[in-house]
Amino acid sequence: DTGVSQNPRHKITKRGQNVTFRCDPISEHNRLYWYRQTLGQGPEFLTYFQNEAQLEKSRLLSDRFSAERPKGSFSTLEIQRTEQGDSAMYLCASSFSDTEAFFGQGTRLTVV
Amino acid sequence: KNEVEQSPQNLTAQEGEFITINCSYSVGISALHWLQQHPGGGIVSLFMLSSGKKKHGRLIATINIQEKHSSLHITASHPRDSAVYICAVLLVGQNFVFGPGTRLSVLP
Image (tube, rainbow over all chains, first blue to last red; front, top):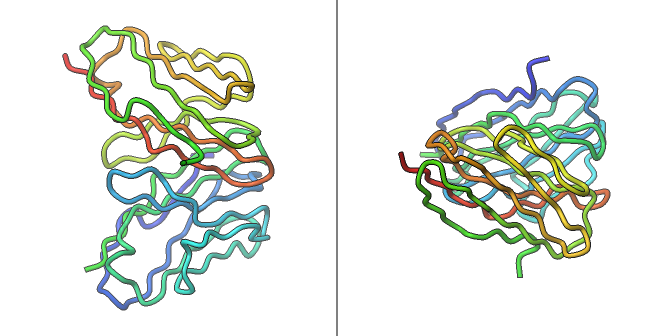
């Protein structure tokens, strides 16, 4: 197992386009978290899953954002009608319940 | 008041110095993580603590649950330690809340 994997690593998109990111957690990890980090700031919570259930969703997440974890393994984060303010690093982390969390390398989104 | 605060915000040290970064939080937690992030890079977990003290190489992390405070110490600092160090608390039964980070620069 090579750890938490995120794809793509970088994404440049035009304003108004839809984008989808993928996160593959460490095998057997039941929790999966999505965070957003803008330049010079700490990560901000977006949403998290326990298995396939989405347990919490931040108020930061507008209706344009949706996340899924259909089989309790990998997860996707989709942003519809992207805006320039969506430009950020999108981070995924996974853990087994309350044990140590491991982070992916992130997907850097640039909306032009 | 933020749920997780860190100090200092920025820190510049000379190679070899002993460094301390502090984290305080105001909520009930089940664990606390210290994370390291290099510029443009991903986040690496350094420690997860729920009590006491942990040591890994030149890094030491302590936590005082009663005082809601944790410290990260780096002994014999080196330029490759230059990074942002982030304190993240795992809320009981919930998600992580991150501190704002401490930007460390170690000069040769």
